[in-house]
Amino acid sequence: MAAKKPLIKAEPAKKVNKNAKPDLVEQSVVSDEEYRCTCCGHKYKKQETNFNRSKSPIFAGNNGYLSICCNCVAKLYEGFVKFYDGDEDAAAERICQITDMYFNPEIWAMSRKISESRRGKSRNRISTYVSRLNLTQADRATTYSDTLIRRWEANVENAETVAEVEQNPDIKTSPEAVRKYGTGFTAGDYDSLEYEYQNWVTENGKPMDKRQEELYISACYLKLNIQKLLQKGDANIGPAIANYKAQIEAVTTEIEDRKKKAEEKQVDPVGLMIRDIEEFAPADYYKDKKLYKDYDHLLDYFKRHILRPLRNLLTGSKELDKEFSLSDAEE
Ligand SMILES: [Zn+2]
Image: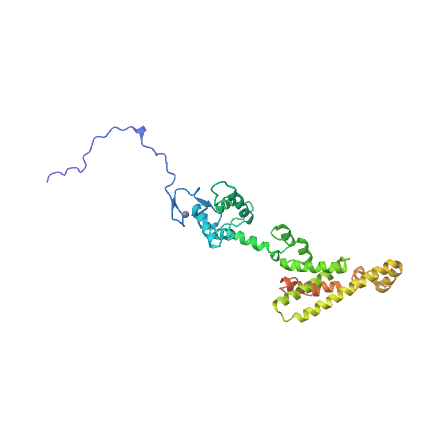
């Protein structure tokens, strides 16, 4: 057999310059990725100028940009203005829902002026809004959930402390009213309570002390209770009215007595003081200042057995009696 021929013929080595070995070519294209708008389908080379930034976790994996391009957001907004019969606020709200964006009423109001003040071609209002919103996210409100939180907190009945009321500019009820009547009432309740309270002051003068103030307040609670039962068509309204009537009588009688005493005191302060001491402070009792201050314990009774349960009933609070109550563990 004849010897096989080698398959590749060995060629003589070519001359090379080992210092001129081809190196990496400088990259001119950063990325050949394209960013497709999920609404119009257009493919963009860059997200930066074509999509709005977003702080929503929904778009975190999209480099923190919305998946709907700026043009589409503007078009959708115009569409929703028509959909809501010209209501721009409702249209903006809808866009915020769709894009999981915070609806800030202050910035939205501002965006109208900015959009209108541009001479010539006016900028789409929602575009102005989004760019402004992204510039001013200092209060950490960024997504539509924050809109819902803000609305919840704007209702005074959801405030758990007076401090929360004081710190929230969205709440219109005065912190003084919340301090006076307790937390948990609606804005309308506070108005009714305060209106009723002022009626008492007009009719019977400013409360001379804490006790008189509590009497006024308890009458206000009872009146509110009747209003609520009436609105609900509750059958318990009869006893509530009887209770209210009795309370009014108690308050007015007490106030008249006090007036009489005050007048007497002016006429004969020494004689009256002696009468007071004889009546309420025989030797042993005189040392008990608390007893003298609130000798019939009526105020304490009111606070514990009328005001507290009534407040619980009206606001749904779980305030317990300081003495006669069982903790959860004991029940
Ligand atoms: Zn688009």
